[in-house]
Amino acid sequence: MGKRLTKIYTRTGDDGSTGTASGERVGKDCLLIHAQGDLDELNSHLGSLRAHNTNAQIESLLIVIQHHLFNIGGELSAPECDLTHAAEIIWLETWIDHFNAGLPALEDFIISGGDICVAQCHIARTVCRRTERHLVHWSRDHDVREELLKYINRLSDLLFVLARVLESERGHQPTLWNKHLVLPQPD
Image (cartoon, rainbow, N blue to C red):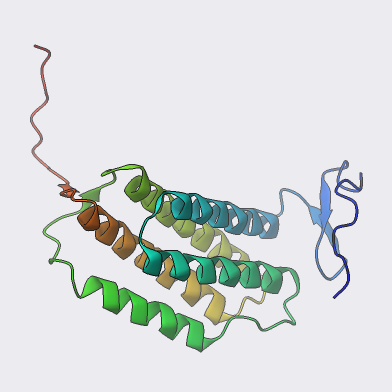
């Protein structure tokens, strides 16, 4: 493959449009571009998570996931490319089961927190959910292979489990949702 980015600015997007891999020009506010932007944002949050993470197993897992997200973005831009397969979804499920096996059962919803690494994992999870919403919306009128939707859905589940694992590894107790929270008063 030759060099892909020889010039960073092209001025072709100055009119509010952008090009897809197929050569089509679409508005930068197109739902497809929203979904691709969400994938890019998610990938960046995973990079930030990697920067704060100290678990080597999670590190190698996140790198693979970042590559998968690039594949999904490429597939959205060039639907004739089948880069995401059932094997990657099963792979995510295997990791979910692996990490979840060592966690206690949940008693209630978890409030995000712990430390910067745990919080970053929760941010990635919520961006993943937004990505999924945009992909589902896009798929209502366009062909999106079900493997892409399944992958993003499983990924958000994995990120939730990873946040719990990281919280436990770092010695934090989860903050569970308290429906009957007493309002703190100043001293």
